[in-house]
Image (cartoon, rainbow, N blue to C red; front, side, top):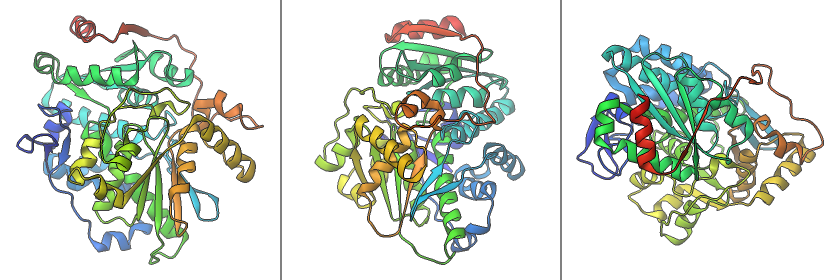
Length: 434
């Protein structure tokens, strides 16, 4: 499989090069040149397949012959080693719980897959690489844990000072070893801008083998397609495997990598009728679908901080899928923006009515289901465990949020470097620390 730039289709790379480079030599993002349509036999057996087998069959066409079958199956097995259950909240409304991994966030799947892919290629080529990642909350911790201790890989995580939860910050800053967490005096967009400038800095790129672990990297966002196939597989086990029930999926959206992955899954033949892009106060994408004009804005801090992205990168990939036509996008995607008050009221309502605890991101996703058709099944993605936002959630519901048994509270010393958002300062740090 080859990948091309969304900005310049003449810039083409194979999978390995696309993963290592992160960004093409332009302002675009890598997209697969073909989107395979999976055979009907796969969909008829979907409810009988394991999560790992679904992951292998969905992702294999995007890798091609660059990784042998046995190695790739092992990579997928190691990535998808924790449950992703579909839980019924009430009636035909479900939550797909993506928070059962090591850092309690949906990004564990993409980060673990990317870490194993990069580790595999780095070992084969015997080269050292530096992973740069910007985070608005959960990406940093997932990447830090996914890459922790991986040989020949150093990780630099940038997060906005004072705009991530204490739990999220400690998951990034207490590891040490090959993980360096940097707090930037600015917003997530400032962090993301530093990462993008570093990738497009040819001197840095060539000297330090920089690559990305954000959803701008194809190996981060592609495995997120598997969520959607697994959700439908579980629905088919609940209903008749041959049933054609309409399915709406609400996706809490920040950088829109998860939504992009879902749209790719639909293009591959998966039976999802409609998506809802659930946004918080950062409403660039909902406004795009409404007005037809895409105008990124500075990010706004909210309770659902992993979604605090004012200039989401993956809109470029969505545009590539739909010929940059918001009317075409709107055929498959609705979108709405919801406030912190909406978020808190939803957490309160769902818990008191159905005894299900939503985190602030899942609450936005659930609230956005109001935009879905009343027919069929509705699924909201629960992208983080409520314990990561304990203070917010417990201020609303009457009962405590319980720490999952497989996660230990990290009380280790924090290793934090503080930097200004000036690119020259960040570049000097990278050079001096390598």
